[in-house]
Length: 325
Ligand code: MEV
Image (cartoon, rainbow, N blue to C red; front, side):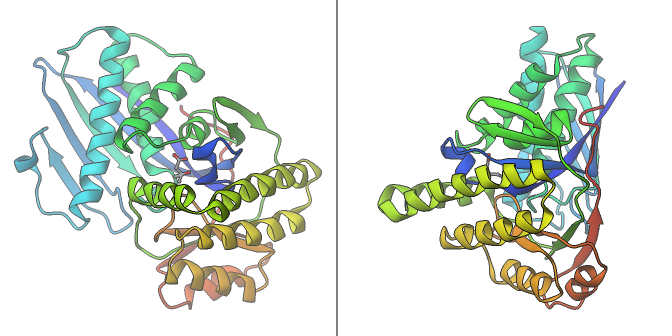
C-alpha cells in the first residue's frame, strides 16, 4: 500500500481571474487530505472516503452510481468528489501504461469539500502520488502537479487553472499565471478562516464568470482589475506589508462579489471579520458558499466569526511549508 497526503490552500488573491490568464497567489495551509492506494487483483476501483466534509460521512463507492449510499452531501458534490478520484486514477494508469489495473483507494480529509480550501486538488495530488508510487513510479513534482491539473480540468468541464493543484503539490505560497507556476517567499501570515458549512459548485461558478465576461466588457475589465490587485499583492507579500495585503484582499472580495461568486453568508463573515478589526477579508476559492480568509493578529476575528449568523466554524490556519508527502 502507498500513502500520500497533500495540503489544502487559501487564495490570498486571484481566484477566478486566474482561469483567464491573470496571476493568482494561493497559500497552502495545514489542513490535509490523506490518500491510501492499494493495488487490487482485479481491475475495479473501490473508493472509501471519510470526513470529506466537516460534518463527516462515509462513502463506499465501487464505480457504479447505484453503489453509492445516501450521504449528507449533495449528489452533485459527491459526483464531483468521485469524479476527481476516477480521473486521478486514470492519470495513474496513463503514467504506467497499465490500463486495467484496479485499486482500493481510501481518503481521509480535514478539508471541507467544495468550500474553497482546495479539497479536490489535495485529493487529486495525493491520489496520483500514492497511485503511481504503488505501481513503483515516483513522479517529479512538476509532472505530478501537471497531471493533477489535468484531473481538475477534466472534472470542471475544461475550465481550471493550475493554481490549486500546483500549490497543493509544492506547499508554501505560490504564484501562478497561465502555465508559469513558481514558489514565493512569504512572511508568517495571521490567517483566520470562517466556514459557513456550505459549498459551491466550482464548475458552475466558473461558467457563471465566463458568461459575464463574455457578455459585458466591464466584467472582463473586472477580471483584469483582479490581476492588477494580484500584482500589487505580490509586492506587499515581498515587503511583508500585512496591512497592505489586507486592504488588497478587501478590494479583491469586492470585485469577486461584483462577478457574482459571493453569497450572503460569505459577505456576512467578511464584514464580521472587518468589524472585529481584521486587516482584510475575502472569500477564498470558487465561492458561492464555503470559506472566507482574513488576516488578524488578535483573537477578535475568530470570536466575532463564531457569533456571526451563518458561520459554522472559525479557526486559525498555519501556512503549510510541506506540499505532497
Ligand atoms: C477554485 O479553487 C479556483 C478557481 O479559480 C478555479 C480554478 O482556478 O481552477 C475558481
